[in-house]
Length: 262
Ligand SMILES: C[S@@+](CC[C@H](N)C(=O)[O-])C[C@H]1O[C@@H](n2cnc3c(N)ncnc32)[C@H](O)[C@@H]1O
Image (cartoon, rainbow, N blue to C red; front, side, top):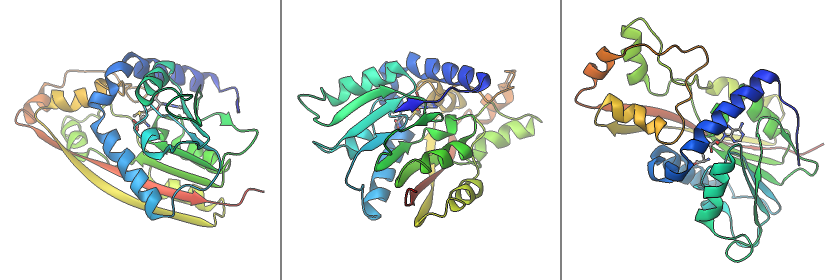
């Protein structure tokens, strides 16, 4: 496994993202409700579509192991990777020792947007991580080119419209990360001439008692890095608008791409 050198912008963004998640790694699992839900959603989607193939699996952006614990079965060669060493430490601590409790499981710090594999893994899996790539569409397609099976979930453009509408009324955009468009992702994957490309989109609504609780749902897991170019400014009208709570809708793409390697 190698990690190709990144462009300077990409490298500094990756460092900022890794630090941000690293700072919250200890408490991540307790607050990662959407990620927990999507990990189960992706594992179910994978099972409904035939499950993982035999052979080595690489997970990109494993965090504290919410998907890892659902997919790793004893003895399977499974490499859990993340950009953040602190996240990997928590993953190791939660899932137990590879030697005693989890034969076949290993860990590595890896940037999923630049990773390349000398021996292609039988499958690459990743849950709610590729949105952090500088170019999520290109990054997903790049991963798909390196394996016979890529199974992933990613939040989509059009998520959290309730929050975005409150900022639009102020004539501004929120600081939320710009998310990829499903048509662009599917088009990029179709150009790889896959043997199989299947997907499902879920709209998942979560209730938050206040605007602060919604913002905390990102902050407390380390996902508060704003979109590039965002300048924080007072948001009193937004706080007031959601004084009695907020139902925020995430759009999540689950997808499976299978292709023959050349
Ligand atoms: C929202 S968390 C999801 C973690 C885990 N997949 C889960 O479902 O709980 C995003 C994770 O991706 C990692 N990450 C962000 N950018 C990454 C990249 N370029 N390569 C690998 N991991 C990355 C972060 O460190 C963090 O652990």
